[in-house]
Image 1: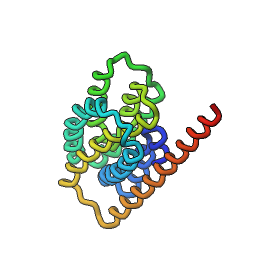
Image 2: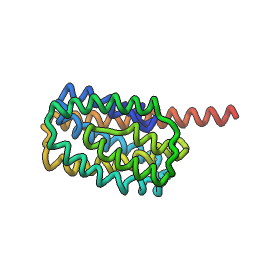
Image 3: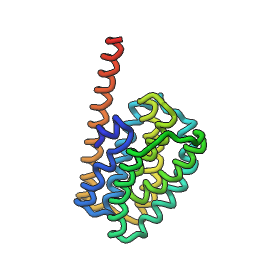
Image 4: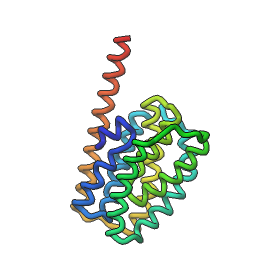
Amino acid sequence: AAAVSGAAGFGGAHLLLPLLSNIVGPTTAIPLLTLGQIIGNLSRIYFGFSKIQWRPVGLFLITALPAALFGSTTFVELPKDLIQRLIGIAILVFVGFRLLNRKSSLRHRQLLMGGGAVVGFLSDLVGSAGPIGAAVFLELKLPPLVYIASEASTALCIHAVKMAVYEQHLSLKPSQWLLVVILGVGMIIGHCLVKKLSLAFQKRHSEDL
């Protein structure tokens, strides 16, 4: 999952969420996944910190963070069976969104702020809205490493807001914290692998040129 998200900028959460929901239940799966995503996004940022484009990141977060706060507050009050259905619907919608995505006619400022609000709310409500956030940043035509690091910085901030709310309402068992560690280590390894493969590909491509 980390290798996929490290290469594409999204998708890791949607691979892990059904598995975690089956293991620990939907209510615990999203906070657990959020912690894993915080670790994963930190590693993505570390590998490309100097490349982050702070202006589009700031525009995106202006609306994403308030929406994330509202979405996470709504999540903790939803029935478990409804959360499970929302997770399934969200995965199908996000896959369809990427398959049907077309170039946007909106200006970058409108796209970033509107996309931030949608991503912030949905990410907290159903675990992740990575494909939508990725589509927004892909519209900026950024180089791959710049795109991945910039999108990861917005995801990190959204996940931090989520955990601030979840921590007040939900508590993880000691065995579940072990899962967080396993997720985090796995994500770091996946991102390191993608980073090395990317550098090797770029080197070979430059040599061929």
